[in-house]
Every structure is written in C-alpha cells, then in structure tokens.
Length: 443
Image 1: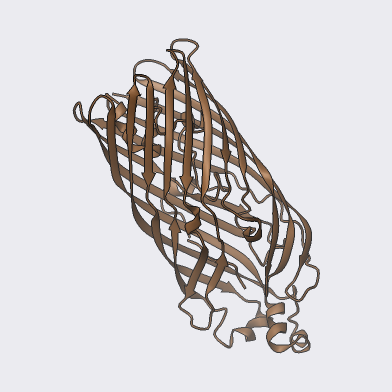
Image 2: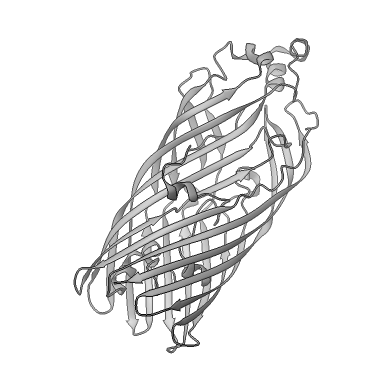
C-alpha cells in the first residue's frame, strides 16, 4: 500500500522556498549563512563576523555593538540517481518502468536575522530559518513507484532571543522557538497485487485487475506546529579566542492531515470493505535536538582558524507511524532506526586587503541511516564537504557575502521491500552543489 506519511502545502513564502533534497545528513538544513558556508560551518557558534551566529549559537548575539539586519539565501542543486539492479512486484514478477531519473530537486533556502542593542549588557535578536527539509521526486512510472514517488518536507522556524554579557569574557543567551512543518508524500498502489492476495489471481484477472495493470495512488498531506528552546554560551578565555556551546531542543510535531486515494474504476470493488477511501490521518514526528561545540581563534589581524563539532540526536527517529481515522485502513508504519550523528568541520579566513575576507573549509557529515533501513524517500549516506567564500565590506554599514560548497556523497545501497509494494535493489550516486549569497546592514 504505502510506506509512510508525512507532514502538505506551502504556508508562507519562506516555507515555500525552503525545500530541497536532504541538505545535511538526515533531512537537516545547515545552509543558513553564506559566510558560514564558506567556512564549512567551522566556528559557526563562535565566529561573530555575521548575524547568522544567532542560528548556530544565540550567545553570539552579545558580540554585536550596533543594531543590524541580515538576509541570506542558498541555492542547492542536488543530484541523486539510482542504478537499479533488481525490482520485483508483490507477486514476484519483474517490475516495469525505469530507474526513476534524478530524484534530487533544486531548492532555494532563505534566512533572516535582526539584532537590537539595548545597552552594554543586553541585546535582543530574531532568527527566521528553515532548519529541516527535503524533496525527492521520481518518475511516475519508475520501478519503485509503489515505495515512493514524491516526498516533501518543509519547515519554518522563528526564534526571538535575548543575550546577556556576564562580563568581558562570558555571554549567555536563549529564547523559545516556534516551528511549523508541512509536507506531502505520494506513491503508487498496486491494486492488482492486493487483489491477487485477497481474492486470488484468477478472480482478479477476470475483472481486469492484474499486478502492475491496475495502478492507483495515494497522496498524503499534513501539517503541524511545535515549540522548543534554543540557548548557548560564549566564552573568551584570551583575547581573540572564543569557545561557543549551544543547544537546540527537540520538537514534537503532532501531525494532522488527509490521505487521498485514487482507485481505478475496475478495482473499485476493493473499496467495499472501506479501505482505500479518503481519510483524515494523524501521527507524531519528533525532530531531534542538537548540541554544538565551536572554536574560533584569531592568529593575527589577517588570519583566523576555526573548528566545529555538532551532535544530532537522530536516534529519536525510530519509526514513522500514522493512524487513519478510517478504521478499515491499517496504520502506516515505516521502520527507520536512525542513529545519532556528528558533523565535524575545520576552516580558515584570510583578510588580504581592507574590506575583503576570504574563506575556506572542509567537513565530514555523518549519515544517521543504516544500510538495512535506507528508503527511496531519504537515500542518505555519509557526506564530505569542500567550501570557499568571500565577503566585501563596502563601508561601515553594508557587507556582501558569498559562499560555495561541493558535497561528495558516498554511494548508498538500496534494498527495500514490502508485501504489496515489492522489492527494489540498487545503488545511488549522489552529489550536491550549493551557492549562497548574503547581505547585512548596520545602523
């Protein structure tokens, strides 16, 4: 029938833009800053050269002595192509169709920041981001259509915050966040196989309902609101060296939506039991907490180096379970069994002339997905980043930033199966290119 259900349709301009192939391991989106992208996010929670530190470590808000605003955007161009080695229907016959094409879909991810200086100790800030999201989309008639066709997840998060400078070395900050999540999931349904399993092959063939010959589909949409907290501290043991610690809590999303079934007319008798009829659906998705350690060190007025380690509690993502209000429709359950991950990166900046800053960085991005639980919806695998970027400060008020990243993704094996959806086996070859631009204005 179907493998999972998710969270529907665009609510805001930012939410509409914040979608793409999984941009960091799992379906986390790290691309919230052109400057930080240029350093592979090394020192993201300790380098106070732009306002995006508010997302990576709220305590960085204390570094700014003038009110300012900043906007960033990232264009992500992913590629994910599956080379299928075998594919069978639920009755064991060879699947018809192609390999699905390029499942990666381009994405535009914007972010916004603002900081207000109240006094020598207290600043107020606002961060607007899309911290999670993905899109994978296959050809409608591909061999794995009963497992997945389109998978979309979009999020929107707004975080107001306040920072307090305890002394010249230590600052703390925090604030609540509000998150909205919205998604859509589609896949085909092999009514021929379902019919053969319940009524027998000959009976179904007489009605013209044969495996792969009476396809329908399901289109699931839903959304949810959730709340959480983000906080951090920033410590400067010696001038020019900063250490940042930050934490963002998990958020529980209680999803409510609809499941719309399309059943071919010749298979409509299969809905007599009440199954495969449009229904409301609900479930819970827990997005993981994260914790990070960031270090920034100024070697001299021209050179600086930085590093970052980020832990994400993806082990909370054990399964996707959703219940249909229609009692004749069984629960949708997809085992995930993800693992906690670490993202590690190093970077450097160089200032060759007044107004200019050049950036570079390398990163390793660990995947939470085991080979045994990889699905066509999120064909994730370990990633390796190489990045560079540049800033130019026109005057004391305006700064423009640009960053670029290329991500190499390890080949990912797929070996998925289901009683009615059949089996698909193969190997993904994937890569991602990212271009990001940003601008800030100081007042």
